[in-house]
Image (cartoon, rainbow, N blue to C red; front, side, top):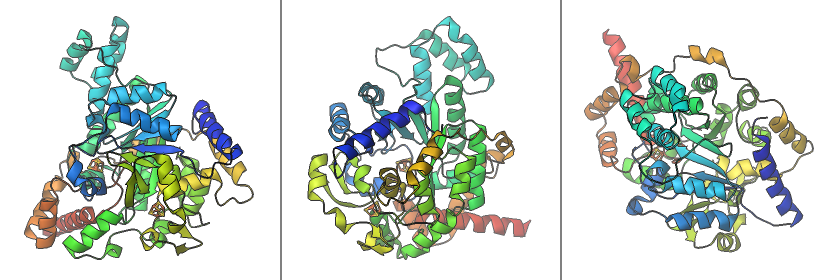
Length: 470
Ligand code: SF4
Ligand code: SF4
């Protein structure tokens, strides 16, 4: 099965219950943003830009847990910001698991190994020595780490431990070169890979979460899946990057750029995702085959953004993860007060111009699961996709040159930044101004890729120039 039976059954029960009760709208996945602070400043991240005035604020643990109870979503995706910075992340994960939720911790992975070391310290016993030896041999922990782990945990706080109800959901936007450019820090991809390897040794479930941009090459997406499949990750989510409203306004105002120069239109998304169904056969891609058909341009779907609501410090964000027309204190109030007929694209016609190019998973994947645009055979397709044996790890993926950037000595970010510093004044000032609040899409961001594209373009230019000189 692509998704473990107990988890599939839990979601199916939830849908059937609400169908029988004829509930018009209900939540499937809660996107919980306990804070918007992040340790990275990814290019173009809409989250930090939109909430730049409340970066230091955070939801209380009680508020987070109450939000999950309030909307009753069987699945909670803890995002942000970087959720591993949230001071009570362990208690939050434990509390959500106690509530019986399926929990995704959407992370840029920079603190994942630390959290797993904390877990090891909490459960340390001599029987753990072979595991420590393996981690040490694989250079995933140091001798000093081993000493600390052997001392045990110094507090009584819970740790994030492996569970069949929990996934690490690691933000990966390409192979090393692309990913580190987008997150604007060298070494992040390498850390992601090491964290994933350590997690798999310790028995955690791991998924990757990828946003596809205009600049993302289809071949690279395939190679990325092949590589991470060889590491035995448990699944992948993938979604098109989209002209995030907050980021689009910022781009026009500050960079004097036209959004269509950077963002995926519907047409471009369909071209990029033309092979999504083939990927779904080869790799464990989460989501419904109906949504995959939609991405590949084979059918239309109606947006069901209310099924993946976002809750953050300001309240329930409406209408969706991407656009903000208001925040509501209660989920039900948001459901009742928002005129949902104003949003989405129906039969190719945008009800709201801001929705025109949106095909993101948080708007349309639930439509596939809920049968919103039901066609004969959909139930069988969804059933088959979930219940048939999941694709085997693709061990040939070990041959992919995943480390195609800084770890092979190219120092691409320095090169890209130098190119910008000597190049476009607008891009330079935008990049510098953006130091604390620019962000790229991913598990958490999703949206404005303009500055990333600028960096990529400059970097490509710099590489070309260098090879011409050589
Ligand atoms: S997109 Fe990057 S900067 Fe934004 S929240 Fe995620 S990891 Fe942080
Ligand atoms: S189509 Fe739906 S998910 Fe996309 S921007 Fe519009 S309301 Fe949000």
